[in-house]
Image (cartoon, rainbow, N blue to C red; front, side, top):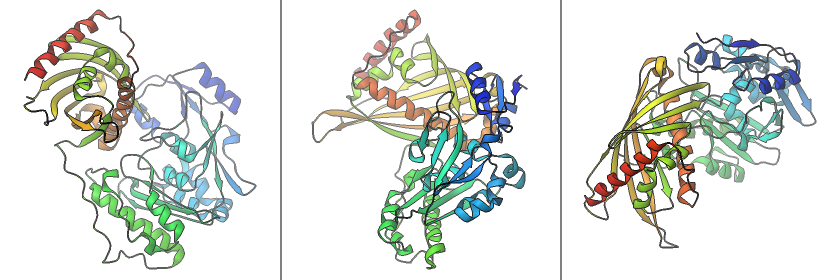
Length: 471
């Protein structure tokens, strides 16, 4: 097991000092996710900073019309608090439905929010309530705080002190559980403000916490179950895994949202026979993971930048090195971190091109990636990439739609994480990559790299491109 020092500060000032002194330290706020990852060797903090003795973080109190819940309040403490029950019964019910008694008595609301698991209950409740997350540095609205899979607006050295919930007219959270873990296969939180504005937040879709704007607008205009009848939740916002398909998850969103509203209006929540058909997910190339990005450049220019090592090293999150091994094969060192997990992969990438016969046909390439993470195991993925020329109707410029489809596999300890975290990592890293890559195509320049092997790789890439476009 990794050797990690244990610190137990007794004040907010001491916590701040610990984090300033030890950059690789991690906060322990219940530790239900962090300790499991540490025991598997998936993260290696130099210090654990346990927050359980910091008294300022355990308060539940009324502040004007708002309810304050300290970051270290456990799920069980929130569930049994008379103040929470009288101020906002939804929060009490949500906390009572989390996992089992052992986890409810140890896990904390601050830890759950900082981890931001895409199937956790608290993010949905906090987002629907339009709550404010208060840190040691600032106050962050819920809409800004949650930034995707296992990602939040928290910066290094920043940590949660508590959550402020404004009073609402009514709120309800319902979830369809995954039986073994009691995580939400789908969870829906609906909250109606004192002025009648409705917010709907959804968890369990596999791609991070999200809102349903169409339902919010319909319910704000008419607080009735039937206001939801013309709506269909887009299955493309959900993920298919071994527990449920994307279409099934999308259907559950509609069902649970209707049930939540019906709990207040006393209407029947049943789906009417005249309900619109659910949109089918679009056909795709083989591969469990997929994504698409519109890039501001022609396909030829996109290819040139995709295979420029200086650009790649700048755009790939966590990439610290890249070297040529042989023609059309190169190696990279990539450190991946998501949620409590951190792993460094020595990655080999092999490129295989497909013939490009006509201008209207997409350019295609297949990449085989193999990454070694030492004792943690191995990751492998086959990625199919297609570049489609797309004309902007306003400027008439030719842009590129890049579609990618991947089939990843993990072995060793990494495989114990399951598909949910693996897919979350791939989606999150791809979003970061294309955001940076789009910036480079828009005019930013990649930082030159002094490693001579990169220049050798650049020459190889140029030769590869010439052969590719001659086909």
